[in-house]
Amino acid sequence: MDNMEYIDDYFNRSNTAEQKEQFEQRIVRDISFAEEVAFYISTHEVIKDQLQIEKKQRFRAVYEQQKTALSGKRPVRQMWKYAVAACTVAVIAMARLLFSSGTSPKQLADDYVQQNWETLDIAMSAEPDSLQTGLALFNTGKMAPALLQFETILERDSANFMAKEYAGIAALRLSQYDKALFYFSALASDTTLHSNPGRFYQAIALLKRGGPADTDMAKKLLQEVAANDLEGSKEAKQWLKKLD
Image (cartoon, rainbow, N blue to C red):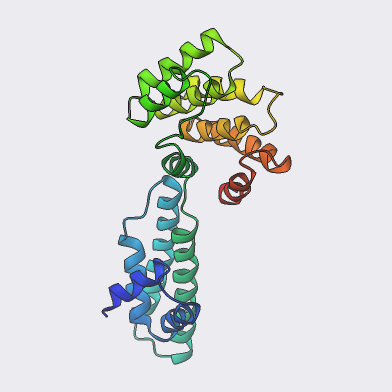
């Protein structure tokens, strides 16, 4: 196994705890290997947003500084040892930042939508040609007709909470975030529901929209969901840790 494959396994979490420890010890012992790790981090295509780019730049600055310090004659073995240790700290610390906490707010919402809203379960209803029709359209990728179907139901019955939920999801899938927020807000305001995902869905729409204040607003909603154990509280608690 060449070094690039070995390094890739480490960052893709393919190694055991013992193997990870051996990897990090090798960085301490072998300055050439530490430089290969630095090169891997600096060139790997995982920089998805500005925050990650800034982390990469900070790492590069530290790495170049240490590389310059190590490029001389290194007359004193002890000084070389300290330089390697400093480089090691930079490699490991910045690598963990890059590869462990690189999820953007929008990515959290995108992943949820992909995992949960690619298709929707067909609901049992007393109106076989209303909600089911909309869901069938949604599940075949016809988002605009599906949204129209759910909105038509709401025109007849504004209290239909399932139509509000589905209309919001369809609007979100169409990137109509303001409309999605409108329907999710209406859903959240329904006090008759024993379990209500409206607040959590509002947070998802805000993260997807990604406006200047949207992430902060989404965090407040997620805090409310988590604190009150509302529907979506499990995800809310996990996301809040990543958004801090």
